[in-house]
Length: 114
Length: 412
Image (cartoon, rainbow over all chains, first blue to last red; front, top):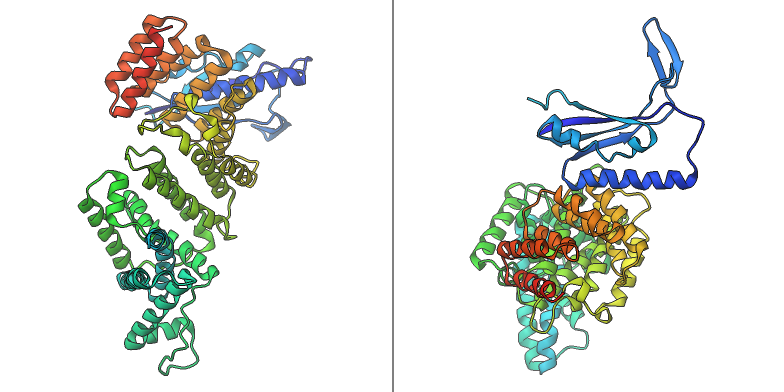
C-alpha cells in the first residue's frame, strides 16, 4: 500500500490563547479525528510536534524556534496508507486544525508510491 | 466412592501439570516423555489404590511422595541420569547418588518450573498455532482428546501437532529456563499472545462443552496469575491482560442460556455476572499502569467500563476514547466496529453512519452494525443490511442472533 503524509500546519500564532475548556474540546476532536482514520485501518503512525525548537539556515544562521517570520508552524503530522493521493486527501477533511485557521497538506511518501 | 471419583480428575489435571514441570526441568526437555510417563503412572496408581482403599488424608502429599519415589528409582537405576543430576544439583562428589536426591516439589519450585515451562512452550521455534495446544497439554494437563474437543478438531490432528512441537523442542535443544533479562520482554509478548488466544478459545469457542470452555478460560487466568507472582514477569501488560480476562470471565454464566445459545451483552442478566471476578479484575487493573504500554491496557480498561451495564455518557465517552487510542496502536476489524458503535452512543446514530460507511468491511458483524445504525432512521435500509448480515453468517448461533434483530426491527 502507498503511504502519504498529512502535515498539520497551525495558523500564525495570534493573541487569543484557547481557554482550558476550548483546549479540552479540541483535544477530543483530535482524538476522534485520529480514531476515525485508525478505524479505517489506514493509520500508520504520527506525532505532534513541540512548539519550541531551533532553526539552522545557510551561513550558519541559528534562530530559536521554528518561527523566523510570521509563518505557519507545523503542528504535527501523520502517515497514512491509501491507494491514491485522492484517497489520502479524503482523510484531511474533518481535521480539527481547520477549525482554528490552520490547514492540512497531503504529500506522497517517496519509495511507497510506485 | 462417588466423591473419590470426582476428586481425582480435578486433582489429576492440576497436579499433573505441576509435577511434570518440575520433572522436565530436572531431566531436561529430551526426557519429557519419560517425565510424563512417570507422572501418568503415579496417577494410575492413585486411581487404583484410592478406588479400593478410599482417599488418603492428604491426597496431594500422597501423589508427590509416590511421584518422588518413582523419579528417584529411575534416577538411581540410570547412571546417565545420576551423573547429569549430580552436575546440575552440584552434589558433593561424583560418587553414586544416594537417597538424598530431593525432587523439590515445594510451592516455589513448582511455580518456577511452570513459569520456565511457559516460556519453553511459547518458544519462537514453535509454530504459533501449536503453542496453545502445547500449553494445554504440558502446562494444563489436557489430553489430545480434550484439546481436540475444545478446538472442534480431529484428535489425530492435535496428536500430530503436539508430537511435532515436542520433537521441535527436542531437536532445537530448547532449555527449560527463563529467558535472559534482555529477552524477557520480547518473549513475554509471545507468552501473553498465547494466553490471550487460549482464553479466547474458551470464551468464543463454538464448542457446546461449556465445562471445557470454562476450564480453558480458567487455565489461561491461572497461568497469567503465575506470571504476576514472579518479579521479572510481573509487568503492567501482564496485569492488564489478567484484568481483561477477569472482566470477561465475570460474564461467563450470563453469556449462554439454557439451550446453549449465546446471550448478547445488552440482553444479559447482570445478576448472573460474577462480582468476585469483577473485583479481582479491578485489583489487577490497578497494576496495569497509567501509561498505555500495550493493547491489553486499552482492552482491559474498555472491559472495565463494560462491567457497568447501564448506559451513561461517561461510560461511552471513555470507551470511545479508549478505542480511538487502541486503533492507533493496533488496528483490528472488531475494534473498528466497536469504536463506531461507541461513537453512535456518544454522538447519535446519524453521526455514526458516515463513520461506519468508511470502514470498508464485509463481515456479518459489519452489516449488523449498519442495520443497528439505520434502525429508527430508515428501517427499510436497516432491514436490508440485516438480511445481508444473515446471508454472511456462518454459525447457527450467529444466524439466530441476527434473526432476533430482524424480528425486533419488524415489530418496531
